Amino acid sequence: MRLTIACPEALRDDANQLAMVLGYGPDDVQTYVALNWQDAGGNLYACASLIVSDTFTSAAQSPLQRPAWDTDSHVNMTAANRAQAALVFSLTPVTAMPDKLTACAGDDALATLAAMGLTHVVVDGIGEDGIGEDGIGED
Image (cartoon, rainbow, N blue to C red):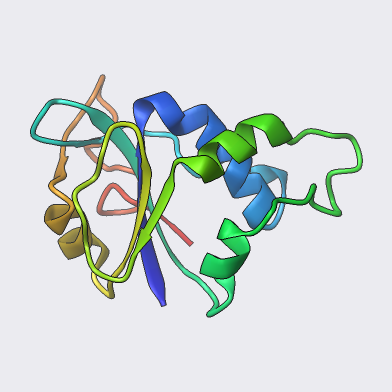
């Protein structure tokens, strides 16, 4: 299943901590970087789209455990838990909210972002090429 995730600016640091917990290692701290998506209210979002396993959504909603690779405590588990508390999963697109980390299933990331009410923008010169060709961080 493909998940497309809209991370509002205010949750970006916490969401990157959660990405490290749920992902593969310390490089996942760069999951939500460019704020090149915007909602109708002008709120900015960093977005990512990734293929996840069937167990990902249940794991993402279960009590978080420090990753085995994090022997030096790089992950801020308090921040990861805050991001998890703001996480919303949906099998169909729902409107992105500036206080929620919104993850929606859908095969077409750009169509999912549009259905979430987001449009691509260029901010401080970032977003012309985006992260990935379409401005979405992808795995």
